[in-house]
Image 1: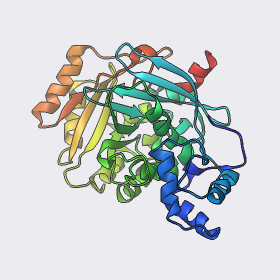
Image 2: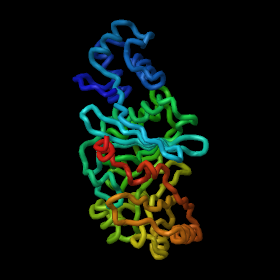
Image 3: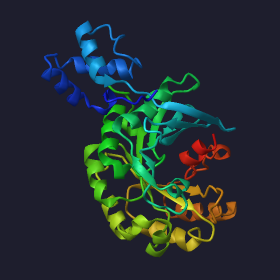
Length: 351
């Protein structure tokens, strides 16, 4: 449970920062690894149970740090097995995370900000505006806390930064959380190949993401001309399609890696055969795959989902051009947990 205290959430520290803090107080730096293993591998909630540490060290940690959990306010369950978690943060703000069932595993979709400043017209999160960035510890807590939830029957193997917020606008804390999430020795031990960061196109941070992490990159493209993308995604006015795709071509992909381009299909806006052909031209020569996401209709939006024939025709055009294309039928739609539907404020206010 998140608590209001002047103490520091120890999850906000890197292993190196914790080791340095211990050294400054006369404690061997290797103890940092022991402490973090208790927190992440053994799900410790207090320092008292860390029995391989001396009593003085445990007391020192207790005086200076907390091991915060998020307040789990509500869990909504979908008919397809998805689960949406509403968390309350220590300052009273709310975020959502979504656990998505696949055939043999779960994917966990986590948030990086309270609200979002990007203003994408198709996204419900954007309607609530931007409040603040999540701390490193708050990002990690979504994964750590849900891993402790005894309900899931399959392993959680995939983490996607596709929840509330623009991950690259909270770059330092997102990258810091990725380090812990993928640390096999003293973190949560996820494979970097199973972690994906999705961006609306913050070109200024793309190069740094590729150089500082080895996770997968997903780019929310959603249009094939600047006029349409300007309308759908205001970020395009600062980083137009040509600049974004140039940055993607220079992105530091790992061997065999591909950039995923997410394309939300909206009836009468970006779903024509001409759009499909332009998309094929835009991505020519790039190591990429395409996720087509039929628009998830929600209250208050004038946008509509295209007919199945239109969706299939769009995919067929891209397939014939040699692209790997997946139609992503979003799960959790009956609990507003699908792509673009997260709105923690609305859910919190309905309590």
